[in-house]
Image (tube, rainbow, N blue to C red):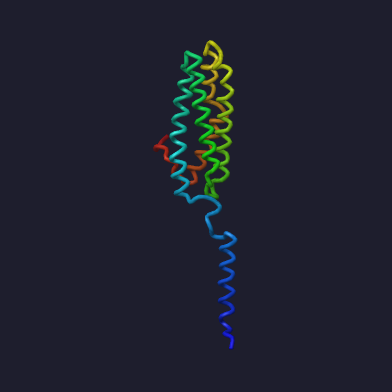
Length: 163
């Protein structure tokens, strides 16, 4: 004798299993908000602070050797940070902003790399002027816009209030 009610139950169980195997309802689309916030807070504020200090220091450089060393530090820090950002899986509601942030840091890396010829010169006056112009660079504006957009969506990235 067959139980007529078992068939709908069996179908529901099989359908649920199929949906789980297909990835529906999983977090494969990105990290949770709290995980993403934690990852970003560990990376972005210290990076932003370090970049600002190094950029300001470049504006005041008098010797080409120190300038070259500082540029190498900035470039390496940016490469490492970009690689870390690329491995993150942002929540679905900030994937576009996260991609914009990565693009902004890549552009900033190109901006700093462009300073290398000036850093190799015997005089650093050109370097100081070019480093000063970075404060209004499109790359920094892109980074700022992306960070503000992520924060506007309710994400706490670890920046102090009012910064």
